Image (tube, rainbow, N blue to C red; front, top):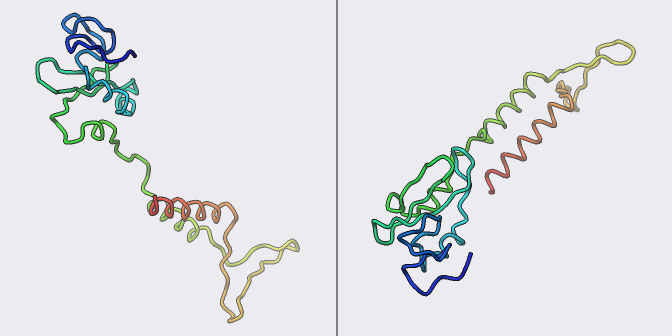
Length: 156
């Protein structure tokens, strides 16, 4: 990119007269910094590079969108159009769901006895004579991971 041209009738990007320009910086003039500062995320539909375009028919209006798939919206449609473009639905499973699934697995896969090397069923009791539940390593590891994910989601 070049410095902003002296003439407001000159394109910021290609320095052609705005009336003849078709580049993505057409008409931005002093607003060209918006392109650099926008930090637009890729298109949520096709993954294409997001872009800002000046609407020559409406003063101080910009459109945000994707030239690859053609999805665009004007800045008057949102109070913060860049944040609106960058917003994505969280498609990850909710951490609490992962935690519940891991807890159910512990419940479903616990056991109170195990087969010793000599072939006998052995159980473990605590100091009060209560049966101690045993859980295999993989199931317990999954629960630990779900607890970590849940904790990070609450703090992040």
